[in-house]
Length: 338
Image 1 (cartoon, rainbow, N blue to C red):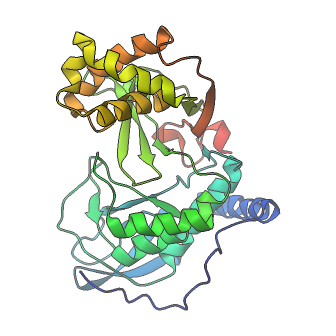
Image 2 (cartoon, one colour):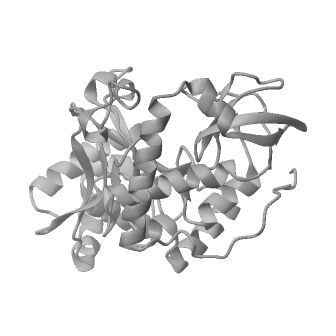
């Protein structure tokens, strides 16, 4: 793996932990800068904020539009839009994320800080030319990824059931323990990273919102058939769970022929894990094969409606404002982004 050649002084830890007053002050400055951006062409903005990276051994200029993606301005991949693998920064087009004691504006500031941090260096990166589902070039920049996560500007992420890269999981544990950046005012079990409305369903199986574990970075597709209106606040909810109640449901679950069909040869502890995660998060965890999760979900939702999991108080966890892609930028931006 290539080594990093970032040419700038090392930074002290904890820099990303903002006071409320400091975050709001920076938010005003960021908003003013965004207004200036909207009055300039994208090319001129890119020219002002070019960053050098070393991509597959070739030094090329890029424009970081946020902390985990850039546009390649020269070299063999010129004009490619690139998505950096292994981690995710919060959306930087507006104040759309919220959890814990953070305001959406404060998390927006940290998203911008992740962008500026990416621009401030020379990073070694590599790509095998593969594209993500949005047609963006997938690029791996190991030292940038680790720094973004360690400073709390980003969180480790994989796009499936597998944990994120071990180095990034370790960096995130350090950031969480120190309450840096996005973790300073609360650590949700999952970060809500993207929203998709019902009309975006492309396969007839319902669309999904993406949740990413703050423990190991694995992703959960929160499938739904809900139409999100512009500027709707969408939240993942968590439910109070009583441990003994879950313990007492393991045997009935294994004895229920419909449910047992999806539990296969899972041990009692794994069955308990499935029941606990559903009761807590209302999704089926990775102990169950992906193709069986929707069916088991429906069965356990019936259990929840029948109060089999007990009386459960519900609370907001990670939230996000829904804004369609075409309404995120320019003069036609959604009202909640202005």
